[in-house]
Each structure stands twice: as C-alpha cells, then as structure tokens.
Image 1: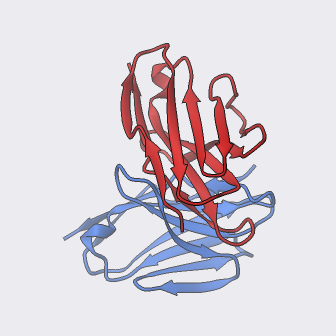
Image 2: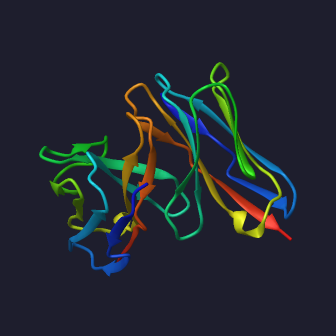
Length: 109
Length: 116
C-alpha cells in the first residue's frame, strides 16, 4: 500500500533549527510536497522536490532522496509564527497526492 | 497562484439535513478537488471535479452522500447529504496550479461543519 510517515509532534526553541522528517512509499513517484497549516487555516504550499538534493527557500529548505524514499523540511531561525502543522505529501504514478498525517511543530520562547 | 473563496466558513447543522458548500476560483481551472480534514488528522480526498463530466470519487465516498456540481471552470459545489455527527469535519476545496500534473495546490479557507 501507499504510505507517508512523519512524526506526530515536535518541539523546538525560538531561534533554533528544526528538521522534520518524512518517509514515503508510493506506487511510482511524481514529486514530494511540503505544506504548512496554521491552526484553523487552510494548508499553504511550502516546497516541491522531484529530484534528489536540497532546495533552499529563505529560512526553509527541503531535501529529497528518491532512493531512500525520504525527505526532510529544515526550518532555520525559528520564529513563534512557525508554530503550525507541516504536511508531507507525495504524488504517485497517477499524480494522486498521498498525504501524511502532519507534524505539529511547537515553538517555545 | 489562485485565490479561492469558499462558503460557508462554518455552520452548525442538524442530523439528517444537507448542506451545500460553494467554491469560487479567480481563474479557470480544469480540475477542482474536494478534501475532508477531521480534527487532528490530515487531508482525505473526497472527489475530483472536472467541468463537463461526472466527478471522480475516492474509495469510501459516494455520489449519493457527496453530490458535486461543476457547472463551469471557476465554480464547484459539494453537498454533504443526510448528515450525521460523523460528518463533522472541515471541508476544503482546492485547485492545482502549475505545469503539467506536478503543480502545487491552492486551498480555500475551508468550511467547518458541526453536526449535532
């Protein structure tokens, strides 16, 4: 079956760095997405990886290893506003999105 | 990008009634997606709505329970029929923007339904 695994919850300190891991098993692969979702709001797009390697976008970076079925989202210089759920999603061979359950990130001052 | 307006934003409904959620996009899109997100959980795709054809439903969702309309390229509705407390959830519409089928999704603000 198809599956996405990511930690349920993580806690980090303001100003620090946190890495949220995601492993996936899909029938075929057409890219890995990360979305941010603040409580009570809709998800918003953060990043897309389809090739191996690191994609950097400001304080956020996303990494992909297709051979390992693994991705991570790296958040630097954490701010209180980064407290949110982070959803990992992979597209399978039919371009269907398989969603992880999300990682709730708690930032402490 | 895409701007999606969804309404109602929230509603409290009685068991056995039906509610229609509307989704308006500021640009023409081929496919619109309807998701459900239950408290503390991730997104579950209900169906994909294509203009001019029947919606495609995912396993566990049926047209009688979740009828969908897609009258044009900027608008869609999802009806939650004969509601029960188990239907209490956030319902989200979304569209895909970008090249081919690997584009990012944009979401409406969501409709939070509580069924008593």
